[in-house]
Image (cartoon, rainbow, N blue to C red; front, top):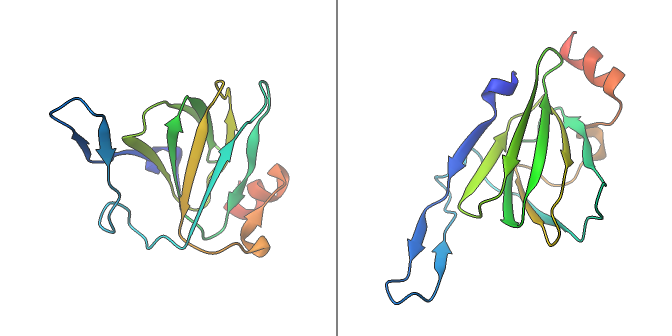
Length: 136
């Protein structure tokens, strides 16, 4: 996989004609996998990072429900930084991509929709192990 395989996906937004806000809906045809786990990050202290790992099989879709944060993507050859700051757009991260989340704004909430239940054996937590896994 390559960082180029990580892509933004727009989430349908329905605006209320009476100015009462917006509604976004995620249905099963938006992502290329069935969602098996949902979790969210919030109250991340200023200057902290999250992530710092890759997955062997799991795919992940991140949404900034509130505020903003940056996602640093790394395929072992190339690094790319993607900023997320809209609740009607998310970032699809396929397997085999190292990711770090940083620069959380105050009040940021990161929603994660993933393709499998938690399995520690799917995580690659050391960057050197990641480089070995991808054959770099």
